[in-house]
Structure formats: C-alpha cells, structure tokens
Amino acid sequence: MGGAKDSKKQKIEKVNYPKLLRELSKLNDELRFFTVINENVSEGVPFSVKDNLCVKGFESRAGSKILKGYLPPFSATSVERMMNKGFGFLGKTAMDEFGFGSFGVNTDVVAKNPFDDKCVAGGSSSGAAVAASVMKNHVAIAESTGGSISNPASFCGVVGFTPTYGLVSRYGLIDYANSLDKIGIMARSSSMVRETFEIIKGRDGYDSTCVDKKVSALKKKKIVVIDQLMNGVSEEIKSTFQVLLARLENQGYAINHVSFDFIDKAIPAYYIISMSEASTNLAKYDGYKYGMQYGDFTKKYNEFFTNARESFGTEAKRRIVLGTFVRGASVKDKYYTKALKVRTALTNKLAGLMKDSFILSPTMPITAPKIEEARKLSPLQTYAMDALTIPPNLSGFPHVSFPYAYIKGMPVGAQLVTSHFNDYALLDFVSEWEKSFEYQFKHNL
Ligand code: GLN
Image (cartoon, rainbow, N blue to C red):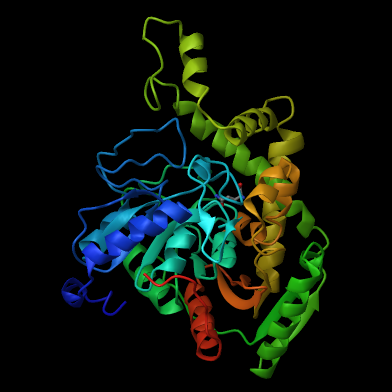
C-alpha cells in the first residue's frame, strides 16, 4: 500500500477496480464476508468498513435485522479520514449482531474462513478479517470491545491491531459498550496497519473520549507469559507457542513466566460491564426513533415496542435481559459495581507487569472451529473462548495479533500487549517478526 501517508501519491496508485469488483463479488458468494459492496468505487487503495461503522448513504446495520435499510446521513470519523486521504471505499463487512459473539455466527450473513470454508472466520469482526486475508492491497477498519479484532485476525491469519482506548474517534460507531469499544485495523502486514493508524487516530471534536496523546514506541526486551492464561489453550497451540517463545529468546528477549491469580475474573467482569452498557445502548431501538417500524403508530407503546424488538437475535435478547438485571438497584453492588472494581484491580496489576515487559499469549485457545461446532457451543462455552483477548480489552491496553504458525493448514495468532499509548512498540515488534516469518494466504485478489 504505497504512499498512504501521502495523499497525492495515494490518488495516482492504480487499482484495477473492474477486475477486483468482479473477483470480489464471486468470492463473496462463497465466503459471504461483505454485506454491501460499493460497485461505484473507482480509485484509491481499497478499504473496507465493519458494518457497525456508519458510512454515508450505505446500509449500516451492525449485523442486525433491526437496522435493516438504515442509510446513515453521515460517515464515521475514521471512515471520513480514509476517504479524505483518497482511499477507495469497497464496502461493509459482516459481523456478529452489534458485536455480540466470537465466531461471526450470531447474524444472518455468516462469513466463512478463507483457509477452510467449513470453519468460522472468528468474531465479531468476521468479514473484516476475511477481507484483510483475501486481498493483497487492502485494509479493513474494524472494532473491538472484548477481542473482536484479535480473534478473527488469528483465525484468518492477518495482523489485527487494537489501539489504546481513546486514540481513534468512535464518532459514527454503532455502540456496543462505550467504555470498551475501540476502532482498529486489520491487514496483511504491520506496515499497512501503521499507515492506516496514522490516518484515523487523533483528536476529534465529535468524541469527547478521543485524546490527542503522543504515541510512543518504547521497546521492551522482556516478555511476560501469564501461566493461568495458558490453562485452557489446546495442546497443539501450546506447543507452537513454545516454539515462538524459543525463537524470541534467540532474538534476545527475556521470557518470564508469572502467576496472576485473579485473571480468571476478567471474563465475568467483562461480560457484566459489556452487557450492562449494551442493554442501555439497545434501548433506543424501539421502532419509533431507531430500528425497523412494525405495524402502525396507533398501537399501544408496549405492543409496538415489543413487536419492533422481536427482530433482535437470541444473543442480543440474552444480553438485554442479563445486562438489565446486573445493574438493577437491588443487585447492582453485587455485580456491576464489583465488576468495575475487578476491572480497576486487573488494570493496575497488568500495568505493573508491563512496566518493562510486553505480555504475550496465543490469541485464541483453539484454531478456527467448524461453523457447525461453533453453533453448538453454549453461551458460557463461547464466552470462555475470550479468556486471552478480554484482559487487554477490559483495560484499554493496546494489543496486536500476528500470525506465527499454521496447524493443519489453519493459521494461529499470538497476541502482544503493551502499556497505554505505547502502540507503536507493538507495530515495531510485528514488523521485526515479519522479516523472519512469511505469512500464508489462500486467495490473492
Ligand atoms: N466476544 C466478545 C463479546 O461477545 C467480544 C466481542 C467484541 O469485541 N465485539 O462480547
């Protein structure tokens, strides 16, 4: 992706769009990773946008039926910044409804893994990861609340970068959980990610949580591996991870194994906080102001409201019920307030561990499961899959997932985490890694 920093150069870069659009449409029939393809794009390096980011005039429904037909009258700040730099908007990518999921199956457009179409692409940014994997010269703008960038990046064999919370404006994002949502990037290489990050980050008057802090590249020579995080990891991933650690040791990193006794509380704390916030965010889809309109306005409010909200999927309904429950006046201290305390304690402990070290783990405990297997998992089994991606997300720490191995032809990612606002150190690390490890891809549009 030559010259993303330089808007003039960006505009002259030639992309054969008629050919790309033809091939993309064909592959999309198979892998179902785009929900909308922009047939009118004609210049600039192509970029795709996760369906929960608004793009003016293009259906943006966050993977939900309730927003079917919604054409935003404005674009998200990150999208607009890419367009202003001359990038070509290619379309909207598939995702779990409102970001609720880990496998991309909680929606009507289920993206398939480019390495094996019987397998999931990951979630919730399923389509973004497939798009990043199958196209040579393309960046995917995605979003993570609890791991939605790392997870699909790992399953689809691409670099997935989640910046420090607050570095990229959330204006124009259809929120899942405001205190956790981060907009990030997926691509085939760290250099493409870096160039895109340069464009989309930075203060935005439309998002008061968006900061203009200097981003550092403080290199750390130590790597911490948290013992408890390895507990649920499959044996085959464990052994590839040992090989990765040995390689990094050879490159001069000191590896320290540490015990972190309450890291297992990250999953319940995350799901309590994220569901609480989600349940309030979803209240606006009542069929009056937002969301599909069912029947006529003469119906009584309760009936109208109930009809409108029938189109939420099962997982969205589950989160509305649980999220509303845990912040109820009588139980709030037991669940919601406690979860906030766990979040603070966890953040402090992780920050301490990262004073002079990175934290490294596999990104996911397994390689991409079959779509049918993923559908059979219970909600709790699914939530448990996020054990490795939730801790940095809960604390807003920047993290990156990069491919480091292939098991039976399926990619495996490792996740590197660093301190707040030290984002460039992650991209530097991955760029070093890419000098000695060649990523594999199945499609080359
Ligand atoms: N799997 C997690 C969840 O369902 C994370 C999803 C996300 O980051 N959007 O909440």
